[in-house]
Figure: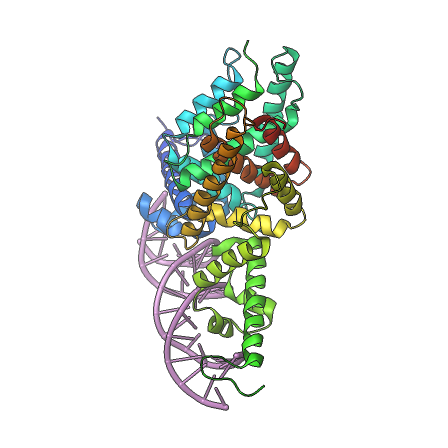
Amino acid sequence: MTTSSASAPKRGPYAKSKQRRENIVIAAHEVFAEHGYKGGSLQVVADRVGMSQTSLLHYFPSKSALLLAVLNWRDTVTGDGGSRSPEESLASAVIRQARFNETVPGVVELYTVLCAESLTAKHPGRDYFTQRYEGLRRSYSRSFTALAREGRLRSGVDPERAAASLIALWDGIQTQWLMDPDSVDMAQCLQDYLDFLILPE
Amino acid sequence: MTTSSASAPKRGPYAKSKQRRENIVIAAHEVFAEHGYKGGSLQVVADRVGMSQTSLLHYFPSKSALLLAVLNWRDTVTGDGGSRSPEESLASAVIRQARFNETVPGVVELYTVLCAESLTAKHPGRDYFTQRYEGLRRSYSRSFTALAREGRLRSGVDPERAAASLIALWDGIQTQWLMDPDSVDMAQCLQDYLDFLILPE
DNA sequence: GTCTATAGTTAGATAGAC
DNA sequence: GTCTATCTAACTATAGAC
C-alpha cells in the first residue's frame, strides 16, 4: 500500500482514530449519565479513556460537541428512532423495548437526566430532545390512527393525546424506576395502559 | 411592648430576617428552575436579592442547605403533600392542580429539572424526591383502594400500579409541556386516564 | 448583619513543543 | 496525535474588618 492521496486517508490510522472516538463517546456516556452534562467534566472522561483532557479535545472540539456525539451514538446503538418491523404490533414493540431497558439502567439514566437538564437555559441538548419528542409523538400518533382504522382503538381515544400520554407514562415510570427499582414494574404499567387503549384483535 | 427576653427575640429584626430568608428562597427557586442546582450559582441568587454572595451564606450555611429550603418552601406554598378535603374527588383534585400548574411554569420546571438531576451521584435533593415519590404513591394507592371498595375502580386495575402510573403520566406530560407548551394538553391527558380508571358514580 | 478580600478548587479551552 | 503548560473564568466557602 502506497501513501494515500489527500482525499483518501490511510486505513490504519483512520480506523484507530475511529476506535478512539468511540471509546471517548462510551466513557462520556457513563460520565454524563452519572453526573449530568453540567456535573460531568472532560477531565473525568479523559481519565476513564486513559488520555489527557487536551488530547480528548483533539477528537471533539468542545464539551457540547461531545454531548451531541453521545446523544446520536445512543440512537444508533439502541436503534431508537428507527421504525419497527411491520409484523410486530405497537404494544409488543413497546413492551419489548421496556424490558430491554431494564437491562441497561445507564442508558435510561442518561436519557432521563439529560432530557430534564435540557430544559434549563441555553442547554446544548435542547434541540435534540425537542425534535425527539416531536418525532416520537408523530410516530405513535400514526400507529394509533392506523389501529383506529382497523376498529382496534377504544372509542373516544384521541390518537395524538394517546401518543403524548404513552410517551409521558414511559418517561415518568422510568424516573421512578431509577429512583427505586423495586417500587415499580415498568413493563407492566405500560402493558396495563396499552391493554386499555388497544382492543384485542 | 417591652424588650423581649432571651427566648423571645425582638419582633423587628426577627421579622426582617425572616423576610430576608424568604426573599432569598424565592430568588433561589427561580435560579435553580432556570439553571438546575449544579448550573445555578449563589452569586446569581445574591444579585437577584440585592446582597453579596457572602451575606447570603449568613442565612444559609451552604448551597445544599439552600436547595432543601427551596424544596420545602415549594411544598408549603403549593400545599403539595397535604391531604385534600374529603368532599373533593381524587379526579377533581388532580385536574384542579394540573390546571393550576399551567399558571406557574417556573414551579413545574423547578420540580422537573431538580427531580431528574437528583438521580445523579451524591445529589443533595435525592432523599427529598425519593420520599416524595413514596408518599405520593402511598397516598394515591389508598385513594384507588377506597374507590375499589365502592366498586368504582375498573375491574382488573391494581391500585399500586395505577398510583405509580398516574404520577408517571403527570410527570412525563409536564416535561413535554415544558419542552413545548402547545404540543400537549396536560389536564386533558390526565382526565382521559382518570376517566378510564374510575367508573362514574 | 453586611461587607471586602481571598483561599482553595475546578472547569473548559488554547498554544506550542515533540 | 499526544503531551505539558498555561490562560481565563467561575465556583463554594472561610476569615475578619466594620
